[in-house]
Amino acid sequence: MAPARLNLGSGTDVREGYVNLDIAALPGVDVVHDLSQLPLPFDDGQFEEVLCKDILEHLDYVPVLRELHRIITPGGRLIVEAPHFTSPSVYIDPTHKTAFSIETLDFFCREGHFAGRSYYFDFHFDHIESARIVFHRYRGQPWNYLVEPLVNRSPGAQRFYEETALGRFFPASNIRVVIVR
Image (cartoon, rainbow, N blue to C red; front, side, top):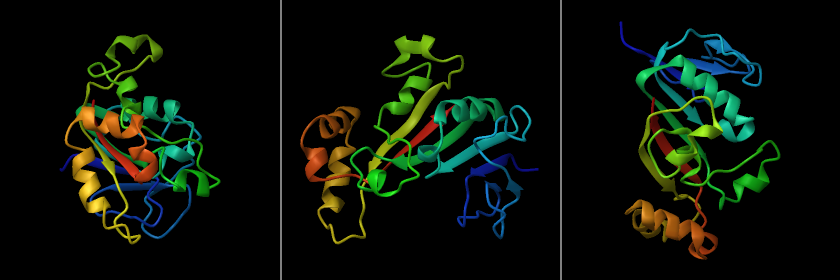
């Protein structure tokens, strides 16, 4: 039996080979559950991989991350895609509660830039496997094909992008972070 994978907040992005969870009983959704109601209906360490694509920004995400830590097996991966704080969609969608920096999820890891602040939370993932700032490529913005690889050359380049006017001139769409439990 293949390790279980969870697509959290799947909506219409139902994925084969995943347990698809959403608040709405849409076609292909395997588990109907409101993510604001914790705990999640899964056993400890049940999933090798959890995909959170465009969902955490709608939630009080710290308790959700605590629950995901519980249901992901040690060594398993959490894949997060969420709006970057420079994205116009952060402000367009009235259901968005927050936006993310490339380093936001570092606070939840034993290793990384904010490892010295482990006292913030009572759970910790191990480390960030990868972190990218993602740019729109479908809105007539051809320069994003050049900006994205430059911004993602290194963590220092990502920080420079976020801390300077570059982020205002070339707004990103999302962050994509893979975290290892």
